Every structure is written in structure tokens, then in C-alpha cells.
Length: 433
Ligand code: GDP
Ligand code: IMO
Ligand code: MG
Image (cartoon, rainbow, N blue to C red):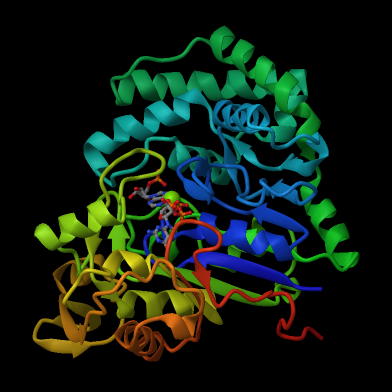
């Protein structure tokens, strides 16, 4: 029995979807615990591509439970599109495979409009999916939950109370159009009829699975530096992306988590605004973007690209308690003569080796690099870590030293079998007392 949390160790898009799909073969259930359809988790089965926004990336395995926990914010329209898309392709044949927490909050159309309108002033570079405004309502205790949607009387009452306030905020403050009650109501009644069967007390379901000795994977969305507390605030998402939130966002206690695995790319990317000390603004950055196909899985925006930043990943290791790191997209660096790794920063002439919590300070740091030799060989076909060219192994060893955590797997392509060092992570979990 073991429960493992998988989290992004940079600014998102590290390849969490690929790794969660791969490790689901060893698990019994996969749980999403935060974020919403701002996430885009890509999985390839051969040439077939899937992008999951809300549904856990374990859904392609028949019989493995996929649970959307209470910490997720749900846009029911997007979720239904995902469900129907999967069913059309022959997956999710058994509806009992998917569960949605009755405590998960809904994203309503006004959340999206508030999100995009506020972007004009605050310029975070959000995905425009209404994530921030939905979490705000949750904390303000005015949010509408999945369980509320199921009950017509409660839904009507809550929607009415919310809409009065949202319309006045949209029209008077943001100079946007408001919404008609009946239009939203009728659309959501449709959603209710399609989603009702999946809505459960998932915290209890998860606990029961744990008591039965099942293996559970907790699938993080976004990445450490997008964490609302420990990331590059305010250029972050609106939830805690760190591993500790797997407990809060699914309803289990911290003593039930056995280990935390981080995912990091062999270089760095970021979508949206905010500091990025190792960003490449030159043709090399363009080359990485093209070779790595670095375009947002949710919004299609080009991702900003740069060198691997060991300071950022070490920060992720600390705030998540990461015990093993998976390095993805090594193959993207195949053609480079020399590689740089950021080993520290210079701040006002002083050398530091941590991410400063003050955003102005972080914005002004200058990356200090170490240069390593490239491997200049195609590594896509490699079958084991020892197959990798010496310079690729050297690169990984240096990264391992700098981040202070063992590299447990290396990904050299987007498909399941293009992964080196795969082992059953549930086989030897840290023991629990
Ligand atoms: P996530 O949000 O962390 O799940 O990551 P995304 O799916 O947004 O972005 C990762 C992208 O990299 C996807 O298109 C994956 O198919 C792809 N990918 C994952 N691992 C590798 C790898 O090792 N090599 C290459 N070339 N692509 C990869
Ligand atoms: P996955 O799970 C990369 C970024 C947005 C923006 C900031 C706030 O696929 O790794 P939001 O819409 O959440 O309020 O936007 O967070 N962002 C992501 N960047 N991957 C993601 O998810 C992201 N989800 C949000 O680009 O900078
Ligand atoms: Mg993504």
C-alpha cells in the first residue's frame, strides 16, 4: 500500500501527464487535487494524442479509478467535452471509473469574464479560464459547489445571489456585459443531467481505497513556481500546487502520503508573464520551442524557453519535499554543442543560491551558469539510462548534484515506452508507521 504525489517542479508543462499515464500501470486510482482546466496534460498512445484538462491522466487504463477531488475547480462544459471525447474514442466505457467530488467548486461563465477583464489591468497572463475568480468565491464562501448543482432549489438560490453581485461588478466596475439568470441556469441544468452520476463523496471513497490497501497516485497540475504561496507571486495560479495540497484537495491526512515525485524538463519553460532568469530571447530559444513543440496544451500560446535552472528546481524540491525527480524532454537538447545550467544568481553584485521571495529581487537577478558539453546524438531510441551517451549522463549527474535529489527516471520522447529507468514506485515506498 502506498500513496504517491506527482508534482511539477518548474512553471508547469513538465510532462506530468505523460508520467502519470505511465505510472498508472502500477496504481489503482489517480486523483487530481487542485487547479482546473487551466491545466493541459498531454498523453500519447502511439501516434494518438490526448490532452486532459480536468480528468486525471490515468483514464486510458480500464478499471483504474479516476477521481476529481474537492480541491479542483470545475468548468462543467469543458469536463463534459472531455468525457464525450473520451467515450467517442472508446474510453471511459464504465461510468463508475470516474468520480467528481461534491465539494469541488464550479467555474461559472462570469468567472471567465471577470478573469479576462481583470487581465487588462493585472497582466498575469492567465489562461482566461476563470480559475482565480472561482477560487476567490470558494474562499469568500459564496462559491457554488458540485453538490449544490445537484439540488435545484439550492442551485437556483445560490446562482441568483451570486449573479446579482457579479453583474453589478461586471457592469459597473469592469465595464463588461452582465449575464442573464435563465441562460446560465438552463445551461447548468443540462450539465447536471450529464454529470450527476459521477458526483460522490470522494474524500470518503479515497479513504476507503486506502483502507483496502490500494495504490493511489495524486496528480498535481501547474508547477511549484506557480504555487500561490511559494511561487513567483503575483505571477502564479490561484491554488497551492505543492504536494501538501494533495491532502487538502482530496480529503486525506498528511500521514497517508508515502512519497513525492517531482517532474522537471531538462530545460525550462514558462507560459504567461513573470520573472524567468534563464530565459533565452535568441534563436536558441526558438530552436528549443520548435524542437520541444513548446506551445501551450490549453491556450496554444508559445511557451517562453530557457536553460535548466537548478535554483528553481531546488526550490521546488524544498517546498514539495520531493524525494525523486523525473527529467523529461532530454531528447530536445540532442543537437546542442554546449549546454548551460543555472547554478546560482547574482543579486546586486552578491551571489545567492535560492529563489528570493521578493518578486522585485527575483526580477532583477542575473543567472550564473556552468557550461557542459552536449552529446550531439539521437537519444530517442535509448532503452536504459546506461545507453545514454557519456555527456548526457554527465549532464544528469550534475543536475542531480545541484538539486540535491536523485533522478529516478528520464524521458526521451513523448510516448510511454520512451522512458528510461521505469520502476514500480509503489514497490518500495517509504514506510509509514
Ligand atoms: P504537463 O502539463 O506537465 O502534463 O505537460 P504538457 O502536456 O503541457 O507538455 C509537455 C509536452 O511535452 C507534451 O506535448 C508531451 O507530449 C511532451 N513530452 C513529454 N515528455 C517528453 C519527452 O521526453 N520528449 C519530448 N520530445 N516530448 C515530451
Ligand atoms: P499544467 O498543469 C503552465 C499559468 C498561466 C499564467 C498563470 C495564472 O498544464 O502544467 P491561471 O489561468 O491559472 O490563473 O493563470 O499560471 N498556468 C500554467 N502554465 N502549465 C499549466 O498547467 C498552467 N496553468 C496555469 O499561464 O501564467
Ligand atoms: Mg500542460
